[in-house]
Image 1 (cartoon, rainbow over the protein chains, first blue to last red):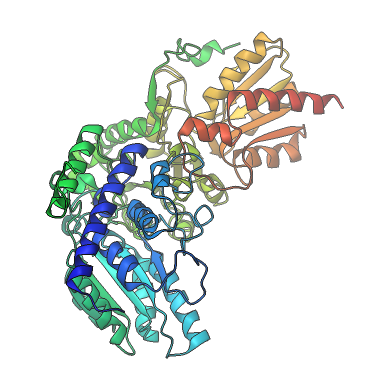
Image 2: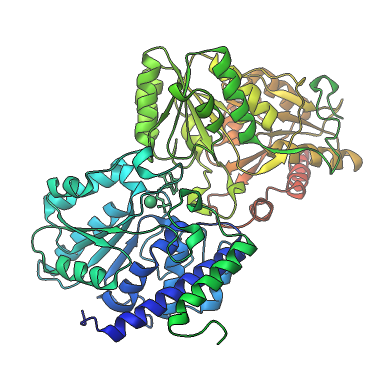
Length: 289
Length: 331
Ligand SMILES: Cc1ncc(C[n+]2csc(CCOP(=O)(O)OP(=O)(O)O)c2C)c(N)n1
Ligand SMILES: [Mg+2]
């Protein structure tokens, strides 16, 4: 990984803001879909695709690329927006989200969009697939492989038994080429995670399954990049990065409310959200530019 | 013509017919079941509002268990509750329950023979924009192969309400399939409903074909029957709300009378309602059958109407299938 300079942080900040605007734009067109998770994960997706991952939009099938498994498929608006901004497909295509015939299915479908490593939507099965990839990579390239498998999970799907079956397996095989990032935003559909199914102490749970654990602020690029760097340096254990995020991050009206898990903004709310995001960019450009 | 004894909605063929989601009827029925029988309890896996189990959960908080996103736990905890005399209704999306937890349902509910009611919401391609991962079109097959399992697919919200009440009293394992979108309310409070009894909704003295449908396809089948009648093609229509146990006597009687059958369902043709009908008819009263349903494909994003049309589940597809099966009869 390159070092993270101040200029790069500024660039990432601006990119994440543009991605957030694209998310709002696509949800406004689709009139259904998820708002909170995608906005909350925009900084992490930006850091991954614009700084961390070994990938090449011109060669999406490059065999040596890193692999990214999005387990919580419902946050795909941020995945699609990031891929578009990274150059995989035109940003204009984001407007087709969830429409009949669109490559941007309501939940990621690899058959429609081949740049995805897996299809997802049903929760709790991403980590197992990432374990399988990590095991295959080790079979093919041994312990010295410099390719990484990234698994992105939500906190809600930590309630699935399937997730913990994978946590045990990764611990057993010491999959240090597996880097898991959890969107610890504290919400799910029916309420706050602490009320629906308490997960704490979460770090201790992973630790007791023989994982290396890092906790970060999921909106701080320095912390995101440092945590991944640390994970890459760990030997003999898988790493989980528990990323504390604010669901709906970037639009005050949507922040920290589970009600925004699975609905799109109305026209009015969307307009305000876009204006708010553009003025945040105002540090760089004024709104009237 | 419409079977008067069914007391169907007088606005049946009116564009202004009332629309309500089938899941809404389930939600109402469960509250009533809870009021009549305090052994009725409910469980949900982080989908309380959209499965419509919310009203019960609010009214009887002490009889509601939130298991979180954990469908295997959902049905196995329900099994334990049932072993102690409770009548649990366990709700999620059909894709995840029974989609994810089939073996747990088989062993801990059917093998154990305890009265757990699996509530599968958001079934069918009519789920719409969420796409193929969320459109359960295999659930009837999964449930109807299980010994002791009753399988119910209500045709509208009022029927879902009645079915929920009946299932609370049925004494055994059951699966009820619900749809997300608003659909026509074709029955009335006064329409008859009995678990395991096929309802003949549209009748004729000399039908050239019999249409058998379940879920919201019953409405489309009635619209097709009306159009066919206007064209001089007489058909009968059965609402097969209970796929299992199958009302053999009624199906055989009407299949023999018509001599040809069209089955219509929002489900894979393989293993679905049409399959259940054909397995039985092949043994007892063989007649040509045309199957309308999903043809070994997955669903995808789109609006419900758009998708039903794409997968050949529209009124015109039913009319075409009827004409085709009549031709086959005459060869
Ligand atoms: C196996 C499975 N069960 C249920 C669902 C329905 N579902 C979709 S998102 C979700 C909430 C999960 O919480 P989280 O992923 O933390 O949501 P977010 O933070 O993005 O709001 C549920 C229950 C699903 N997609 N898959
Ligand atoms: Mg969450």
